[in-house]
Image 1 (cartoon, rainbow, N blue to C red):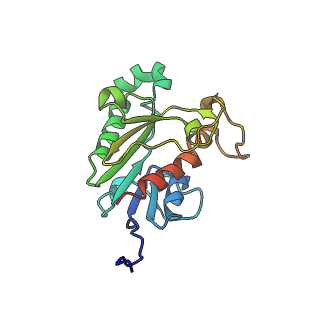
Image 2: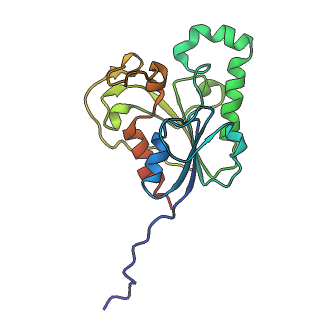
Image 3: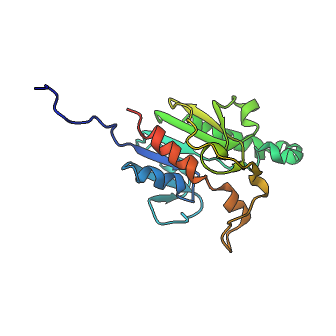
Length: 202
């Protein structure tokens, strides 16, 4: 007779903050796996669920085990480089970089910062990983950088064909939803990969 108890060891559930998210996509992917997750943004949540509408630094010290943050890229993304001189001159870019640095320095054991190709790479540090939607089941191109603390790089889950640029893609956008809001939403395949891979860390 075997001496094992027959019980399967499973990773403990975590308390997770999804910063700068109003869609609830990443939040709900973690909740479905049994984690306690809350999203936070200055905007209200698009779908019902745990959400703090306000400044993320109001709650950042509330004992979270992990934070996944999507800081605004308006003043950082290289796609808007033609506006950089004005944004540097009036301090908007530095304020955005300071916000990112504060997120990176948060007293949370595991952190992921997500942003498109931006000046974070040159002004703070290079990303740990650059992913594409087509690696996670969405046939589009949208380079997304990840800056990671105590988290492994994401492993592609479903490499598919199709290389349409997301910046021009509005196919499938619900009527009445602003284009900027539709484009900024995290792809479900990426959200699921975050939850399945990072949510199973012991």
